[in-house]
Length: 468
Image 1: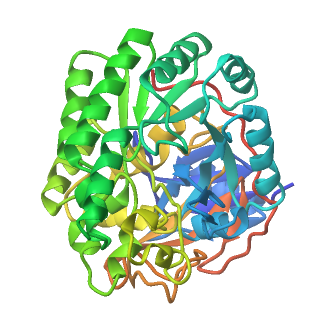
Image 2: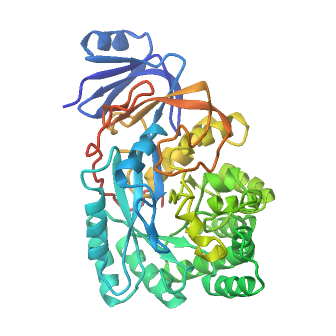
Image 3: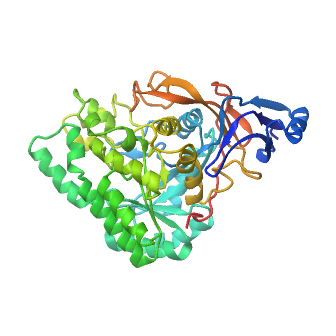
């Protein structure tokens, strides 16, 4: 039983509203909001077991990061964050719910992959979590299993047009999975890159002796992201299925999504902070430093960023997730010295997303409410968690962040809490910082001190998408 908590004096910011209000929390949920200084709010003060002073701060919903990969096996190694370290870092960054990806191994049942991820996360997480299911092998058995998983609260399924021989599905398999999802209410998530064409370009680049990290970005061409995005949209249209395209990085891919949405199709797009703040300049850093920035889809030339910001403003892109998949530079990224294709793909970022997006508010890219919309409310709606998560309203889980919009910080591996030996944003100055975090009414960060625990975070079954 959590303590009756009153959050006083802050500016409550949700996707829908900004209001000076006090927030009452009981039994892990938001009970009521009342105008600051009103008789109602004053009456709560006497009965509250704990009063948090939010004067001068924003009171915002905990972030919902709908794309993380804790402990993901990749290229002979594993992502360096466990569910324990990764969810603790998420809390430090103001994210109170993650949706991670359970992986089906080729030739194995979905159930087996999902149970393995339950085991990884159970009793380890500092904040709440859910799962998507990666489909590596679409067949009659796994198609039937999709229905069972939807009933269990695993309502989204990721397919890959990339990584032949690992996760890749061909167009026929993708169509079958989309048809199944159109019947059971599941949402298909797509890694949209033409993997078979990319493999040809990788082979040719290595044959020419082009082995440095920057060539990773050059072979994974923006046109091959756009082509795959277009193909995924048309397959979804044939199947009568909604589609969510993950980690959109290129202007041409945004144009494909915008055109589909202009036709009224239920097509959605996600981008990530790395595409908004980093570029191929980072991939080209000397002395193999560029390896730190190898992810797929890859970082693009800086001129793509304007299209991504515009897409977030026009709602052609709806969500910013992190695709948090950290590999240490020492011993992991270094596996690709002399062959960029062997660099484990992924960046750390679960701790930085809320702060980077707040900086984007200050830089004029998005509004305050849009910040909360793309980082909290829409991911919750998209993946069947709303209004339990993603907002501050009576009945919602008391996942609440007291955010100091004036505090300045420098992002650095020296001070972050992710289990990785570098920061993708090393030395970047941002204004805004998480001060205090509640997860279901329990303090997990108390005035910049971690007070949470492994095992507080609970598995959250999800309904089907509420964004359709």
